[in-house]
Image (cartoon, rainbow, N blue to C red):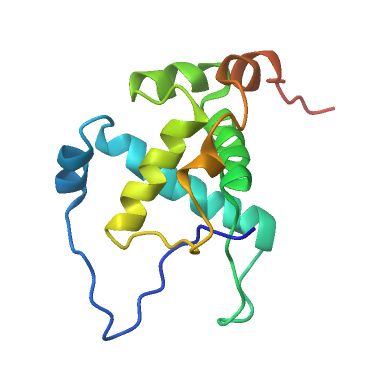
Length: 142
């Protein structure tokens, strides 16, 4: 199943223009940094899965599960063992939180989805404690 991608609005496409702060206020659970993290993590995940865009018409969608995995890797790359702590500080404690943020961004036209995609795609993708602590490995150079 394909779903989320960075928006590519058409020139005359109407948007539900909201500022990031208005979106944060509407959702009421997560700070602006959480939304920015998910947007940056989407770009990271799309790049990792699809590589550089060579065909403007090619699909660059990723599934909810792939996005959760990409967000995990993105967080660990940036914060290492502190990733779970940073996310918890932003009220992100499960993959369902990623889904809530994604669907809020979809609602204001900042991300896209297919008709088949649902919030359930983000439920229980992985356990945060295991994903961010038990499986983390410090990379060393030889």
